[in-house]
Image 1 (cartoon, rainbow, N blue to C red):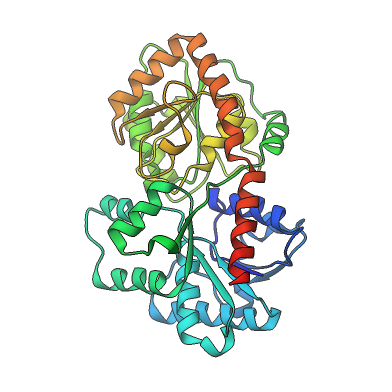
Image 2 (image 1 turned 30 degrees about the horizontal axis):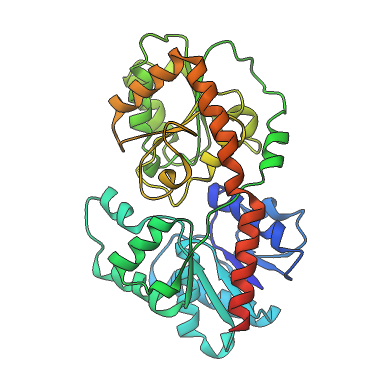
Length: 376
């Protein structure tokens, strides 16, 4: 089996793929085609790794035709060389590259089984851009949906979106919840932090990018005037790092906002949090919510498309608030900070809920799908 992970940054989808391939490696012979930036995630796994850079490819998010064709060619060549009987593409860009490879290099791909995946809401993406997809984007979406016979998505609601809004076939879309290694997360969270916690912590952990809506989170944190010693811990790296600093300064909270940068072990930070917040405009699923729940942290997440509402049972295993509603978020944070017993009740519900999204369940669902596809 050939797995395509066309990305050059480490985030939730990349770590979820790491967990998936670790579980599948006992059942399948796997070769991973990816970029060098994420290769270290897979160095100790029982699989072969090939890097796009070996073929002169460095930007998996460049959608100009020349780049699309070169990525498609690389996939076809590697699939032919390793004699892959099944090819699985992780996320939208890898799925697009695979679909183009199927059209452009049919002779090399032959009768190989193809599976794509989408990890985020297309509708929400274009809503954030405040526009409709242009004709080229519509064409590329249809290339994927019309070419790949099977597409894995991480939530039931996202499946409905693809069918209702983009014309995917009902039998083409397979919802499989993401899963996390609960035991490993808890074990790694015990690592000692480089700083001493002496005040309430509100934490988040994600890629620092536009869809995570950090401005709403910062505004809500600034509204916690009754908790002047509280700190906001932001774990992660990304293009919005400098802008987050500017917003924090404008809101007068820069001295209480701590950006850790990229952390190979974010769980040691998350475990110390009094409340975990994910304020996204959209999520494909929201793996980090499950990770926080497994650590017994009360989670407050935006009720965004499409994952959080399928993970959190409001009032039992966490809380939801309307997207981009800083006032609603600050009210929830105030209530939870003022009532430790409420936080403990939600933490207990989170621990009870987390095993539903275990790595074991996810791996078994993927294994069953892959074997079904191979049988034809």
